[in-house]
Length: 338
Image 1: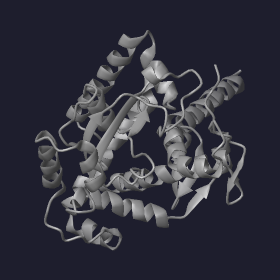
Image 2: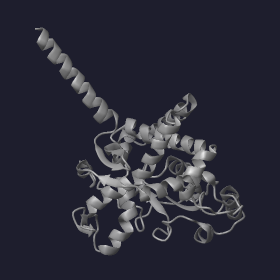
Image 3: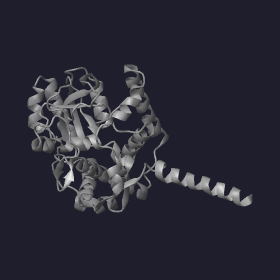
Image 4: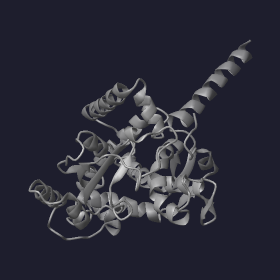
């Protein structure tokens, strides 16, 4: 009898450990970057972003394809689906390296105020989508590649932790010195904030948005998407999506800060040509947002230190040893059919 009880307890403990290490840590480990684990949850919601990054190359190779063929041979012996998965891992690598620094610098926890801010953002987003249709919030999460609210919350928490970590590095000369080999040393004294404000003032004075966008925007995607981006819920950083959502069609925002820099956003009607991504099977243009923007990178002209630090980690990620594990192939790439 006693042996039976011990066996049951052992099985319960084993199950608890499996739950903690598999589900609590974001699913299976699908890759490592310099020994840091990248999990299924770190990658799954980045699939559409990875598709978007590869879309121009795919479209050039297969101009007659109406939809993505994930099994077609794409490059370097990879199918398009495999290339998308690996691109998503590379996107996750920068964040993984910063979160490693967060643990080392003890910046990997949030204050009560920061947690409340995340809660408010989730609550307002839920209200917005559920007002459009019952269950709209959960549907939007699934469409964006999240398994549920908890995964999206983790992403929002990590964004806060990354910001806190970069701010801590800014205040630590030793940490700055350690990153110096990866940082861009632009000595331009004109700040990104002042440049964005000056461009916004010119728009308010009546200058043409498109002309200023093509003259001054530092968005690397501008050449591929000169008419703007069409995107679904949670496909852009929260500040960009929320800023777009709060605008009327044709209205222009004040400069909005994200990890990419300062965005001056003009909301436009969704369109089909030049889209950020093709429509999903059950998706209509009415479900999407669209915007043009003028990006003033906070790491190029002006040498904004926060963006320069982020770009230093991007450079570290590009040089890192990334190992793709077999579990990566288990992540769904093609949109799920109902």
